[in-house]
Amino acid sequence: MASLIGKRDDKIRSVTNLKRAASAAGSVESILAKAAKPLSAAPKLGGFPYRKPNVPRGVVVPREPSKLGADFETAWARKYPARLGRVLWTEGPQRLFIKAVASPTVHGADRLEDLRTRKHPPALIFTPNHHSHLDTPLSVYAIPEPWRHKLIVAAAADYFFTSTAKGSASALALNALPLDRESTGRKSADQIRDLMADGWSLLIYPEGGRSPDGWGQDFKGGPAYLSARTGAPVVPMFIDGTGAIFGKGMKRPKPGRTNVVFGQPLTSLPEENTRRFNARIEAAVALLGDESLTDYWTARRNRADGKNPKLTGPEYNGWRRQWALTEQRQLGDMGVRRRQKRRWPDLG
Image (tube, rainbow, N blue to C red; front, side, top):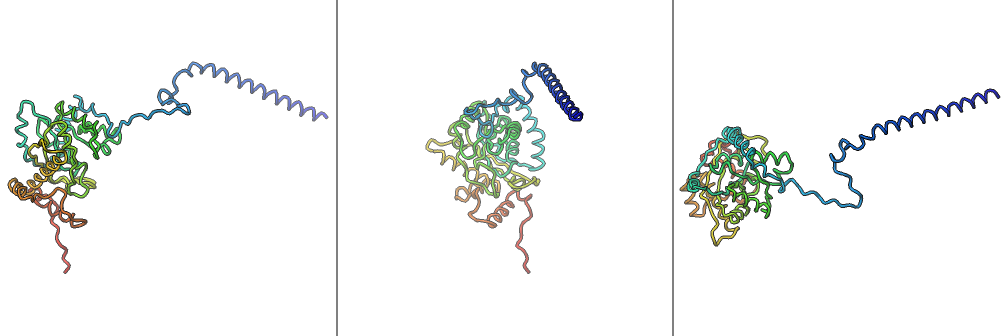
């Protein structure tokens, strides 16, 4: 009996101790809550306003407008601090790099002399062929003043402006402007028109992208459309050699020599539509390509006979097309730096 009474007393004492511990814990919690109450009004780290607030169920929040691609903002790259930094870059490290890797020779800059010597030289649209990422810095190297340092570069919105870092670097180093390579939208056209009215010239690739196989591609109508919309003359350009130095798919550049040829400025004729003017621009660039491989008079004679080689190359497929490209790259002054001539294998 005595043992049962002792066990009961121990159980009562245990329950009493648990109640006291719970009461003490409640008191401590109450004290801590009162002490932390002033801090509860302060914004939590990582919460609002550092994060977006929660959205109640059933409420549809409008999607924020995109800030990448064709909507990337580049106006800051045309402000004085960015322009000064870009001049230091283009006339310093970039110019030395182009000389070391591409050894450029420039022809035809005198064809722009009439426009250059005007009291107020007009804004121009430069339209080179496109085989390499080297084409843009090489064009900036070759384009004479007063257009070189007031030049915007139409860059593919779906390639150069897919992230904030990439887009900012392109805008700062190249003064790149995002452009839809499939079509020139009204927003982009209006922006380019306003910039050209302010004295900025434009570098745009009519092919829309780099050559996938070393030959040219058909020209798109963007430059012709922009010229008709802005009234700016189009300057055809041909770049020879960059495809062999750092063509599409190459991991690193192979130093060589390049040639840049400027043509006579073109303007749209009253009876021309965009399609016909675009065809004339493409023919002018093809003429410069022939001039780069031969000479001035031979290229003009070929044009009179309708024999200027097309930028798109022969109508071959597969290895024959690549073989023809190798043979073409050995022509002209730039051929001295091409890879050695292929020979048929000796089969005994």
